[in-house]
Length: 311
Image (tube, rainbow, N blue to C red):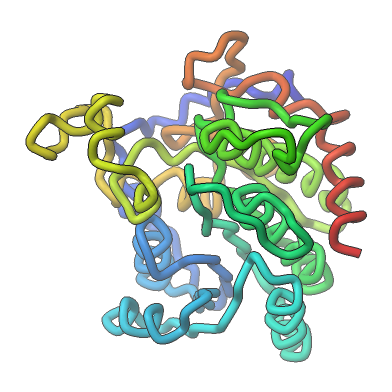
């Protein structure tokens, strides 16, 4: 797969917006599920796909908050889903399977970043559990209604450059580092997309992961202003200071492009950024994709672990 991991020359770029990439695309009759589709980049993704005619189901932990955020977006259905709770995932999937209708787009968008140490389920580290394990369980359960032609999109991050899979301490039982935990979870997102594509392509399921770019959204809610100033994201007054940050519309563009673009027909398992396939990065530059995040052996190993965790 790594031999296909190179830019296509799509004509889009870092400043392309989600509206730009959806222009001329008719999604009438298509059904999409977007986790966290009521906030940040997820909200922009929901808005754009719905405007293109898709029937969108927004999966959210707090349905009241989601319904309020989406009051001006139609047609959208809100359904409860807590990605840190396997019973909630099962209940959501059971509702979708009972309906029996095909899902054309599954956008695994929701996530948390650099949070204080938290444990969920049977003691799982929260970022790995929420960002990866929850989406693994959801996709696995929805598999029957993805077959026959669908795209599964996993929102990863350049943060994956911070850490490969930590096979000797996945759950950070020997000391917690919020950025390494985030990095591992984002590597897991990329590897998960790779394996979904490997296992699903014969059934018409293709999958992609992506880095949306740096955008100010509620994802930063666990970061102190002082930390963002030190990183150069904000100036001393708290105003945005990094010109490489994108608007929400630009940040959602790669998600929407990966989900809908004909430029990706016949491809899958690739990591994307700036509305194109990303190049391989052999050093931790936070641009492109690290080889360990598109390694099929690592992807298979993660799949096996994820099955064991959720069985």
